Image (cartoon, rainbow, N blue to C red; front, side, top):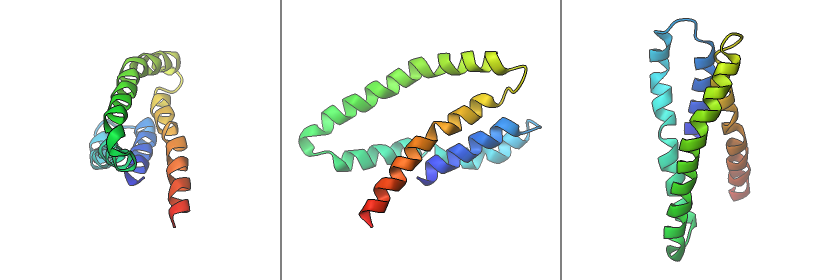
Length: 113
């Protein structure tokens, strides 16, 4: 959850930075956010049984491939549509994509306590 929160906050800040050098100040937080996929893979792998590991890895790889194909096109269209009014809107939208994930994780962790 911490990695997703760091990524989401960093994306929101990237949307409003006035100078390019400020991006370097956000680099440590973006690096913390980069740990998220590895942690998520570990959590999902632990929950799946031994007989389902291959299926889980296949589904995960397929979803990552779809995101790598669809994501850049969607965000490119969004950037070109909003570049004159607010070029940072793509970063805010990226941060908003984390919101449902964070809500699910918070809800699931509340049931464990």
